[in-house]
Length: 116
Length: 113
Image (cartoon, rainbow over all chains, first blue to last red; front, top):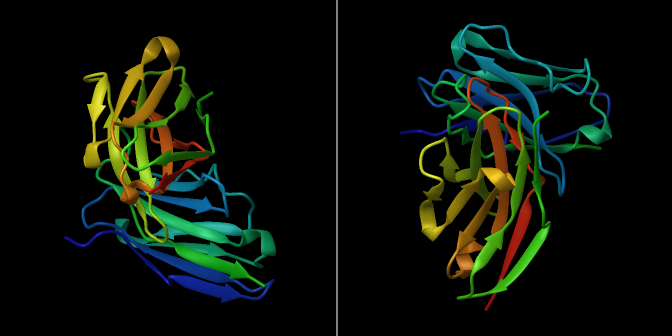
């Protein structure tokens, strides 16, 4: 079956512009995660959605970052007034259950964001 | 607080020799532990995971890892490296009943011919 897909694969924007990154999880997966991977760094957790529960936003680095998940499926990560330090690869993952800690996460290919 | 430490940022081995990638974790709860691999310009893929069953876990491509609670370690090994193993490897910890996963900083594995 289809895996996790993300779009666009690459995004170049100017400082101060807003960007939207999209994630299509595996059909039927309850949980969805967003991570940020900066050059040479590990993955930084951003936000987590599970079913209809309120998302855990504890990893969002600033109020310029927000995310939503419509209909329990597609998710959009929005970065407002982008800064150069926002340049990174943004990874999305989904998992079947999410809340058990033992779930395998299935990752998308990522969106590489470059802020000039 | 949970944390995970990958003890080596880079590991270089010759093809056909053993691989050891080291990972230590700290957790106040029963941990679940994972190893993911990221090949250049590709997404992350699960290699193996430990979820309180057998302490020796076998994964894909000949990799395995042993959970040692007394040492709070979950080192990844492979008896014989292949050129295709060259990639970035991430050790990950989460805990039963939670969801947040903590990624290590990664270990880049180089395999020399």
